[in-house]
Image (cartoon, rainbow, N blue to C red; front, side):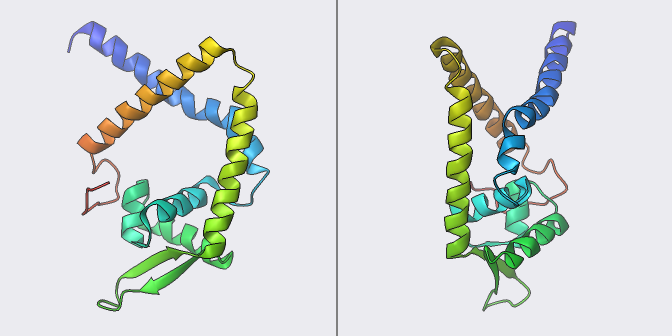
Length: 164
């Protein structure tokens, strides 16, 4: 690897490390005051809304979370009546998780509040900055998806199914 590649990679690493705290400071803190659910719980609800019923392992795979962490999140969501555990009739060792009607309604309500909060913040940007941000976030998303697809086993969560 030549020196320029190393400098570029180091620059990308620095930027990626900086993005999460900036997003948190800009958006997440105000959103956290609107719900008692933590981001991990919202990710689980989102995965179940998008993919339907999933096993605990599949949730972990989709979200790159270890199964014990998923179990804790699911337990909290069950206590809130947002999801339910269903045993697979063919194999009782498999525990599936299904989002309840309340879970769907709450998830969409929270998502709407988040969207409204983001809209208020983004409306303060001028048109050119908003255009650059739109294009940049789309490109970053595409690149991150590519990285995940090329390296599906980068976490300690083993994913047996790789379809998206």
